Image 1 (tube, one colour):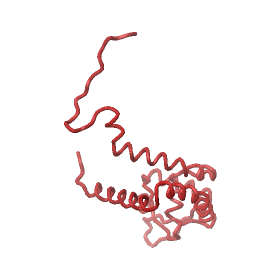
Image 2: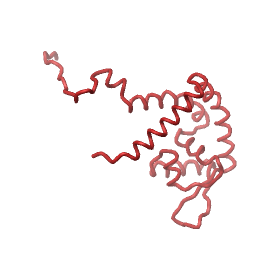
Image 3: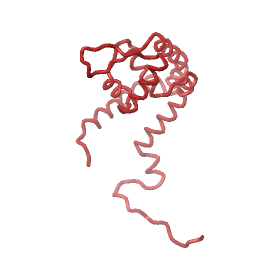
Image 4: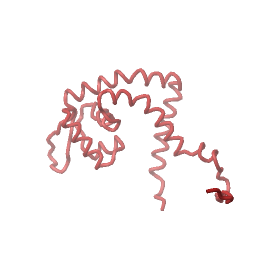
Length: 164
């Protein structure tokens, strides 16, 4: 069915670019695109070991050896509590993590098992090539500046008053 209707023109606030420019210069879209492009280079390593990227983040968070509680893991790994519960269950079933006793019975503390530590070391070794390629292409100094700026942006946006 053919219509002769003209496209609806939306009015944007003054100073806000329209069309492709608006989308291409969007902070949220740029962050998502950079994340997806970067993560594609690392996902293959996790996939090869039947590990999801959130599971890999949990491995990384626990790799220092200190047991962590669920709340800390959620924060460090940027994972919502219901998802973390499923992730911890799956990783425990695979023998990658184990619970650790804690004086506070309300806290669920976990640590890597030897198998979990070995898998972490394997993944880091395999993915180091990709990390070095990105660092070399982007430049080590620029990478450090980018990381500093992203952390600063996170701190700043977290400190802003909540919007309605």
